[in-house]
Length: 539
Image 1 (tube, helix red, strand yellow):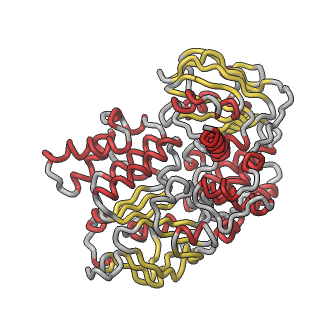
Image 2 (cartoon, one colour; image 1 turned 180 degrees about the vertical axis):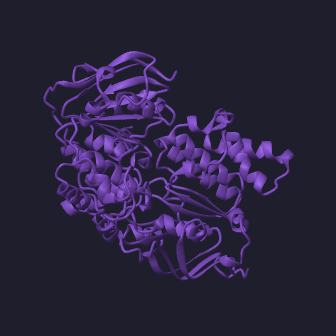
Image 3 (spheres, helix red, strand yellow; image 1 turned 30 degrees about the vertical axis):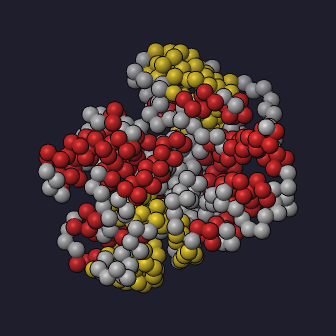
């Protein structure tokens, strides 16, 4: 490979699946050791493009790849089977889809065995990879017992252990708790210093990545290249165009755009750092002040008393009230998904009781219960039962025309006849949420409902949930959603409930925030920065 030749080069690249063009005529190149952020709205073809870059597509699906794609001056078709996978590692958006072994240790070892790494070297390499992602204690654990976030960490370890020349991360922090997300970015930054490699990141949570990234490649909703350049240009002068496309922006940029629209941001250019935003705001304290929602006292809809389950949940008691949006947060592996399944009657209790609408959950007939209580799984594919997007939403509806209205609201009307499994991960998540929304149950329980969504669709999902007449109980790692929408927040740590109350009370409880591996929302971080500045000036 010539030192002046790009490491990855695409010329007129197109990909179609089931006679539908995912993207057409993409031309770009990626330099060796570059850190690239691949952005675009949900369904714009980002994951598909990532799969094409290491030859997973079209080999793994019945798709058609057009144009030229090369790695280090050699066309991808000229690589032997498996040869390219050693050079270009990828972490899927759905980590479960890439596991094939029983335990954590065996899964990390699997790749090493495929590439004939001497057994004497394996143990140290496996330990190092698990240490990097914080899974040392789970080395002998069976994979299916891991939480969603722990599975995502395992998938990352399986790529890191092979030390490829290119690492592609597709939504790597989607299922991680806030501190684990920051730790992952720090780990990747440290590894790049130790052993430089090319990094391609498909991500919606941008704040932790901005300092590490040196280039942004942006696709629009029609899967054409909207922007290609530096982060400063992308999130500075080009930010309004990204926002229009529904592409997530760093929180500091989003805040500056809002302030600029209100006439209270006087900076010459949009900021990329907190101190730049604060310097440009006329009255930072007033801008960051949050209006506290006053909720009228309402009746309980679901009550939990002394719940124990699966040897993990310990003496959990909580109440969900009618008309409230209640949020459950906590570190990966703390028992959030297990608790949500208990509330829906999907996991048996070891001890304790749950009452739904004043009736013990165990007394409900399944058919009657799920007419009044809806559950959206962490993995949306677990609940699809029909062969088309339209039928999935219309299933069981008396007035099927309302399914079309829901499809339009969540931006899936163009995919009405598509099979649910052919959708992108973000689109699958939207569909799974929509299938529950149409039935208007008294209580809706959702596990990470905004996972994999662009800014516009995440906002639409939360707007619909916030306006829902019944009660909503949702799990999330997104502290911005907690701060903006939650009426009540519960914090789970190692199976125990360690906090229940208003979001503002949680942000003031540093012990709970630290113990549960949470991060303060952006608004609160800036407020604390203002206080620190005032103290510094005073002293």
